[in-house]
Image 1: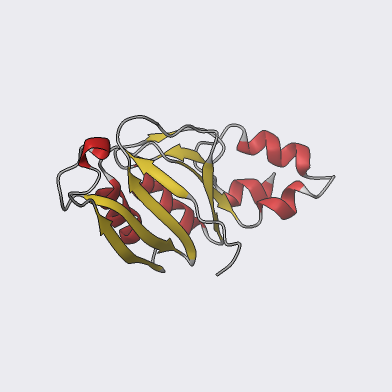
Image 2: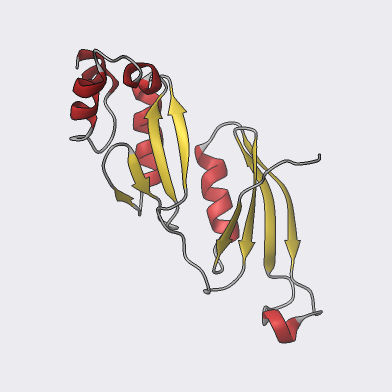
Length: 156
């Protein structure tokens, strides 16, 4: 398809492990294909023949590529993936699974064990933040939170 934007996630050598982790967390996910390094180009890439080069996969219909590109680049919080959740149960589930081996931050942000940043956000937040009578109270409530609590936001 023309003009689709597919995020490419550059891993040192954990692409397959990471993709399996993400596919296990998000229900509507799948691995589409895996390409492997061959003998060709060894002098450039230095990878053993058969090692995973890249994996095309989907999470909730969004296409991604995972690349084993070596240790040259690391993930930063400058890029994150937002997961909008309709229920507290969804927020709790994603938060628990994605922080295993990772770290919590504030305002719904977390970093998974591979260093990728995620924002686990209640779907209703945009509506609450666009209400001039509520925006200050809602913001004040969530600035104190690590994981979002929908009930607390609604009561603000």
